[in-house]
Amino acid sequence: MLEGFANGELFLEERAQGSRRRRIRGKFPYRKRAVLSDGGRTGRPRKEVFEPRAFAYNVTANVDIRLLVGHDFGKPLASRGAGTLDLIDSAEALTFKAEIAPELEEASWVRDFFAGFAAGLIMGISPGFRIPPARVAPDAEVIEEEDPAEGQALIRRIREALLFELSVVTAPAYKEAELEEARSWERSQKPLAPPTHLARWRL
Image 1: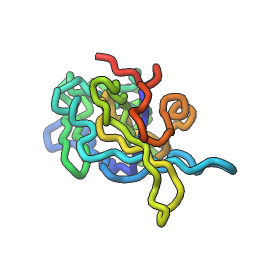
Image 2: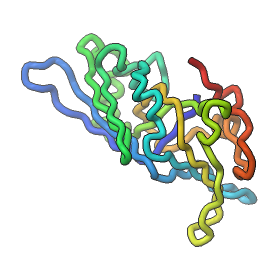
Image 3: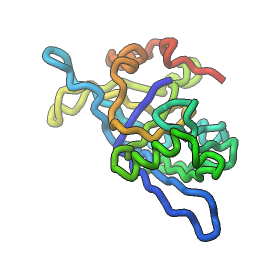
Image 4: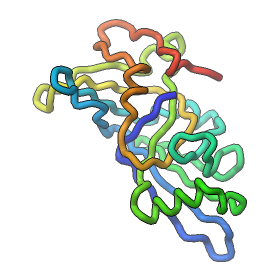
């Protein structure tokens, strides 16, 4: 599974009157470029951007998407299946609203999250996703040249992605080692090669 980040917004709401549940809301904006690599000494910068409604397939299919701490499925905060996570997809952003069940309040990762949020250290939103296979979505991703007036980067434009989780994270950046193994960075002059085992589509 791939992980991404794009200057998301995260908010914590107080418990509603008479409710034992805390609420979290946030959004992952579309059409915002993220710098994956500056290219080092000899390479070219690499950037990535999600097109509007890139996550629409799993969102509209009502897949059991989860809200996690740091992409760790052992540290859940909420999920669609549990009825504690709502997703709203628009042309501007993927927005979510989550409730923390009272039964989770004393879990160590939940306490750590609230402490990190209060300290201003956990403020990022990062999606965990896979690119569907080319036979299903041949134009799911393309690699383009950046406008020379803006720079010399290669830009990976994601049009379709299978979203499985959203995570609250401390570091607003991609994990480059994982991305380097999973992503092709050749320009899209011909159909892209099928995704590697890290980006394979699974039902």
